[in-house]
Image (cartoon, rainbow over all chains, first blue to last red; front, side, top):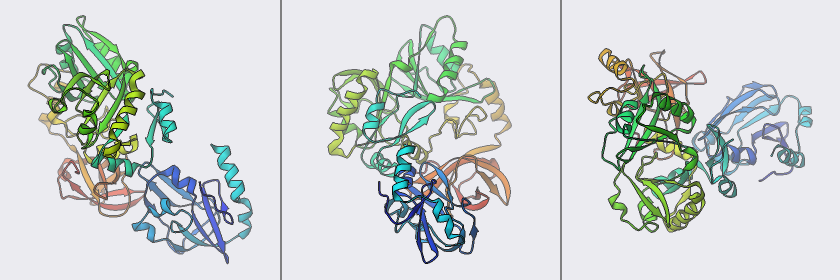
Length: 128
Length: 356
């Protein structure tokens, strides 16, 4: 199970990587493995604004439909359009090619409520 | 949760387990799409021991079973018949396989989630000249499915599998163990189902996996069982058919034998047939992005015209497919329909079934 250092994790199994006030968001390796073969990702639109924990999209695997929840508040500045034709990128490369949206963070202090890699790792152990 | 005899083996194989009708069952081992393709191209082995087995014996067995179900089951010994079983009102109690094991000995193979309801119905209707037994705990069930199934199984039996035709059963040994073997399945591929003593389930599973190694066999979970059966347009009870649907609208008219003696649901079905059904189970392929799921609305000209019963990504077609009930006037191949996916209309086209 891959849990890279240097990024933030939510209890909904999403990750946020922050660079110059922009957060790149995706789902974790654990989440993609739980979902199984991903066949569809419903993306928001650039310009959409979301509060932390808002539902911003949907991810579907062969076996289930799951909502995506914002780990932080912000405005969507880019969506990963590669996922429209290659949703399997989320399975194959959850932390790089399988990113889902980029948002300009409206409140960077929200990052403090998220977990780091060690904390997320313990969180997964507790959940198991 | 109930567990099959192979529960520990599934855990050891790293399967993802889910609650399926009160049973802890493997939904996938390595991945639904990979397992799906193994079954379509080579073969896969399923543990479907959760299925229920109801035995009916006695001098009245044949006429009783024929009264219970809509299809003709007064057939040669050794035949297997797919059939709905209906209430008096024509609603489907369950869909099942009827095995004629001997002249006066039948086995009904029923859906796990319906087993108790079925057993109660059958017991209540049973006349004095039959005996009804729930043998579900006495049987494990393995399904070997896919084009290589025959080659894999042939190394473990000492009779010619070519003699076992589709929808036939035989009592034989597999790897030295007695069991019922039928040439049946739920994937749209050639294959065999093995009804065996639960104690023999693990050694038989291992023997088949070993024999299948050179043919690319994979353990296959309920996830790909669903995508496989949907591509083959085989109904799933609880999704495509239930107590509110009758066999005629579900595309199962071929299983309703109006010319046989009386059966439960006959008069209601005759009436429905004469009145003309007003909806039909159809297949469709989505033209836009998204996956149709159970209970999503189907619209035609912005008005509700039906609902989705099953939908999935189809690994074989690389398209998103589904089935659903559609008002009869729209239920023809080529018709453009709209599936409402989370309040967004996605175009789809009605197609002939099966999908593959």
